[in-house]
Length: 319
Image 1 (tube, rainbow, N blue to C red):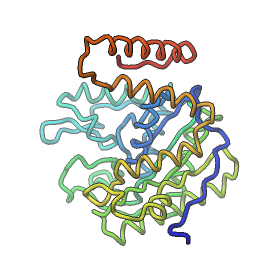
Image 2: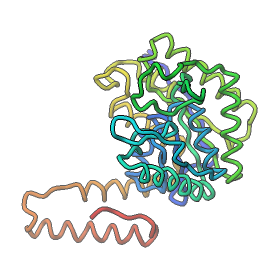
Image 3: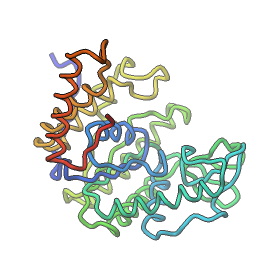
């Protein structure tokens, strides 16, 4: 008896290994995968502008990265004692206007340098609902708790989304023609928009993204079905946080296993086991730090780190 559907996975033609450089952009699932890649010491850059929920925000960010058009005083504003930018997440906000501008422009420079050498660009799309600022009719990446009356909320049509996704591909290719683009749809449901509205949003994203994939049948643009795995394999609410919206640690671990199967090279999986052992060893807190047994354990751990770093000098651990 078959108790649940299993989403078929295609093996990535350009899998991630320990020579890869991975740029991750987009919604919450980007952060989930980024944390796992970081734990296993892959070389990554993750959401330099913080979480970006919709394609137009990702497009605007990449446009600035490519053109290197700097942010100036006219691009930021003060609200509730902090300086913000509508193009970036609130994690970049600052009490100082100068500091915020430095953060924004430094992120653009770092991302450009990284993207020029990136082997993979992973992009997660979260929603097709966007907010337009009333004063200039520009889409915003984050409202920063500015009163909602200042914005107009719209659902982007598949046509607009397709155009935005095409430009995202174009901008990434402007700096790096050889990078592997990997798209996903976030499994996080935006229920604050409404149950039906969330489904419409995800439907528009899926339609637009698969239109893009159909137009670019080569293997350098691919899709990982994170949304479909959660909807069809992890349908039960025990796989969600208390808010019943975000996948919990168990679901994230399951998705990571699927992602690893599809997009991590076999050679890298062996190294990941070594790194996992080292990470667990570093996290261990002995009952008696001064014991002979703990001293021996620390020497063995140091030897494992040294052996790994001889092969991968880039990898560093917090010891």
